[in-house]
Length: 111
Length: 117
Image (cartoon, rainbow over all chains, first blue to last red; front, side, top):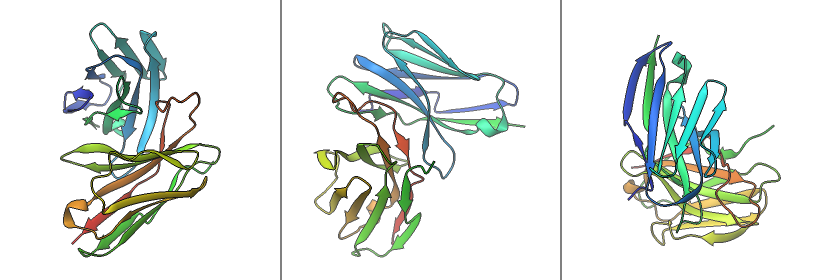
């Protein structure tokens, strides 16, 4: 089964609204990463948060990590149509030697 | 800066044919990863290399799949013979790994969309 699972599977919002996606995982981790994938393209790294960090910002992105709940959230503020993409979380779980990816959240931002 | 380069971008072939996918990692990166992405199974890690040496190929689905990395700037993923269920998008990613941790940021290529008829 997937180590990381994103929720919701799909999200539809209007431009200017905030979008929040969640990721839950099963085992202890060293870091958690978020990636974006535009349709027909490769994944692009957005942000990495380490297990000893609780929150991290990058532009309009805010990531939180709660290791006690084994969960993370990605907040995109003031969304734009260009934010339409799939968003994946990736973790380096104990027992895995490299990253494992979730199945992603599909975000649709309508003008 | 050139990112990860993959070729071809699209491949349509008939069942039973040999398929070779190619990847050029980012210069200076020492690790390379091959993934397969389908709607049903999501993104699956097939194999990864460090310093041109295969580290873990447990994700390779069958003996029909093989991968090589003859030098630091080139890798191939070969499917022989190909089957319709191999249809997917295949991604190559590279990373700069230090201290034995393969969990740092990965940089993905644009992918090869493979259709086996």
